[in-house]
Structures are given as C-alpha cells and as structure tokens.
Length: 324
Image (tube, rainbow, N blue to C red; front, side, top):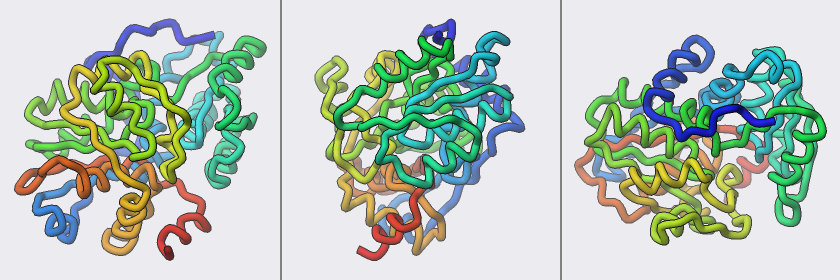
C-alpha cells in the first residue's frame, strides 16, 4: 500500500505540515559562532536539527506523513527503508501514533541508529546496501504484509514536513542571503526550496553533496535524474544513488547551486562543531557547513544559513573522526 496522494508538494503543504507538527516537533535553536564568522568572512547562522527529536530533521517528514494515514493504514502499519535517521523518525512517529512499524536497514548502518530504531519499537530487517535493492525488498514486504510504504525522501508529505525546518529558520532569521542544505535524496533541500520561494525569495539556496556521491549535481547539469552506484563516503545519510521523481523537479527549478564536500572537509567540520560550538554533529549533518566553507560559492559579507541536519553518531566512530 502507498499513501493516496503523489501530487508534488507546494508551500501550502509545508505550512499545513508546520501546523500538524506544532507541539510534536521541537522548534530547534539557531546558534552563532564568532569563529565561523571570521573563518568565512560572513555572518553564519546554524539551524540545529541535530537537536530535533530522534536527533535529525527526519522526524518532521515522518510524523507529517504518518499523521495523515487512514484508520486502516494505521491498523496495518508503516514500512520504511533507511540508513538510520528516517528509520528512527518513522519508528518514533509510529509509536506516538500507535501503529506497527517495519524498517529495512543496511546491515552496516551505524549501530547506534539501528539500536535506537528498535528501542522506539520498530521491527528491523537488514540487507546489503552494495548488493541488494532496498526498494525492491521494501515493496515486496509491504505487499506481503499490507503495510504502507513511506520512502525517506520521495513523498509529498515527507518533503512538506522537512520544509518546516527552513520555514522556522526564515522566521527566526530574516533576510538570509544564502541557505546551505545537505543533499541525499533531496527531501530536505526540496522542502527548503519551497519554503524559500514563499518566505525568503531573496535567499539563494545551495545544496551540498558528498564529493563521492554528487548525483544531484550531475542531475541538475544534465537536466534529468542521474543514477550512480552507492557512494563510499562517511556521510552515511547521503549514500543515495539518485534524487527522487518528486524532489528532482523542485531542485532543478529552484536551487541556485549544487556543490560538494570531501570526507576530509566533513571531518574538519565535525571537529569545528565539537571544539568551537560544543555540539555533536554527524558527518551528513556537517555537509552544509563544509560546502559553505570549502565550496565554490563566495559568501563573504553575506548572511548565511547553515542547516545542521542531524547528530546521530556511533561514539567510537565519532571519536576516531575527532582523533585522526
């Protein structure tokens, strides 16, 4: 089963999601850093979705989608595939809404993300991300069990929910010149672009991908969705092969630029967040800052928004990043 509407989302859907999420999602803080300002010669504002419920922005889209289930869908439950953050978000949202949840996760997903998903009450099925097709596995299981499949990014309710983070950002920090957003499948970027078009049309929105997985950048340049092999990068939340059928048209129409960041730049960013800002950020969550710091966009003198998308890390792996 799938959710009934696959109509591309609009800003009205983002606004409706914000109302639906009021009192459920945290209104995450915006932090400043004098060191970051001096480093980039700009005024930087960090939207801390690493402090969101389940530790990432994904809770917004997951809850927004599940809250619109019919009674029959709630009874049968939800199925999702995810490397971790969407998994946890679906699991918690399902628990809050009293429905079963089954999550298809890669066997090499961070142990902390897999453990948290189970602790929220979801059943977990694993697969090999390099040799097996998670979408095919998920479709088969959803059909067998009569569950509703909610993908991690390519769904209108998910995209609309993710856009509420940028909507809050623009309300809290008016007159941003730039907004840098990490990109995996493009749900957060697409939702942010819808919010920017309606609430901050002067703001240039830039997507940031891992250098090893720049399918979105290639897609925008080619004018069609480009699919790549699963990229090898420490940004596990952005190890996607392609943008979605819904996210790509929004990104193609509205994104001002797409840049990349190397794994080395991500490690530098993780250290900066830990040492200077005293916050824990996962590699994918550091993409936006790394892209603004090392990318091709000249932000000197500008007001720059940085979307920190998540903070879910295995502590042993995180310690190695900081120590290397």
